[in-house]
Image (spheres, rainbow, N blue to C red):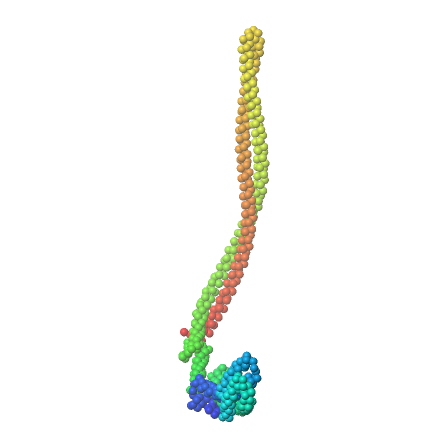
Length: 587
């Protein structure tokens, strides 16, 4: 079995060792006993403070530098511009005063005076602005001298203007050139001096700011390096304190993954790693107990003990393993019980199958005899049906010939009916002629009677005519009698013809009915012929089927014999299976 290697490492703030089957991490009862969340929070707060310190130092120096630059810009940069503007305005004022002395046009004088007032206002505003930018005492002294000289120059300027406006231009010019020029030169000198002072002071401040900038950069770099070093130290210690237990737990997990449960882990701390180590130990113990019991149960199963069951307190998803194991044992027990029951039933059924197969074999022999007799009888029936079919065919031929002869007779009768109809028609025509002759005889007799009457009236002259008339009357009477007899004969002939015609019609109808019945008989005989042929075919098919049945019965007989043998083999195997199952303990 795989065991952990013996290693031992000692660290500054703690140590861990791995010996035999136990992996131990010892920690001091200080910062490391804190929960990891709290330790991480404190470490990150310290790291954040150290990181922010460099930023704060840089921000302080940046604020200082920015303030100094603003001061330099306001008090030196902008003040230089204002001082320059002041000098320009003073020169402008001096020029305007000089123009007032030499210009005589009233409108131009008025414009110059207005421009002079504006320039004076600008000078006053510039003085107020520049006064706020004076820093050193020397700058203030120079500025005060400029202000004082400007006041003096203002008085001189006003006096020069008064002289010019009152017409005393020469006095004004003299005053301007003497006092005014002296004061103006002093003011210009002080302005130049003040401007130079501002430049010099600004350069000094710029040098100081460069030094401050360098110091700021150095301080920020030092702060960054110091905070980075502290952060690195804290991170290294924190990483080591977290990674060492994790590495130990990883190695334990690898041992467990490799199937080695003869390993334990003890981390002597109260943080999450200690709790995790306790959980690992508990997990290992539970797995050992589960595997031990499962091994015992599987060993019992291999020895045929199917009454065994689990006793350990399985938890969580392991409950499914417990249930599955119990179900496996129960299923195996049920399966073997069912196999035993089935084996007994198979043994019993095999005996019944053997007996049934024997009976089936004997009955198959009897069925073979019966089917052979049936085949013999069916052959005789087939011969008789074929003979009937031949007789029906011959009868059909005779019936067809008889029908043809009867149809010919029927045609002759129809021709005779036509002839008798012609005779009847001719007799009617003769009767009509006789009736005409009879009418003529009646009229002749009437004429003879009239002639006799006329002859009697004529007396002796008419006696000869009376004899003729009497003879004519006799002849007409005889003719009438002959006509009557002939008419009677013709009537009798017509009646005989009508009777013969009716008899011929009845005979024709009978012949027609005979023809129809003969056709039906022919159809029936034809159907009998077809049915006889179909019966012969069906009987032949039945005969073939009987032969097949005979073969099947013989095969069933052989199969029954084989089933009997197989049942005997199956009985022997069932007994063997019962002996094998008897080695298992089942409920």
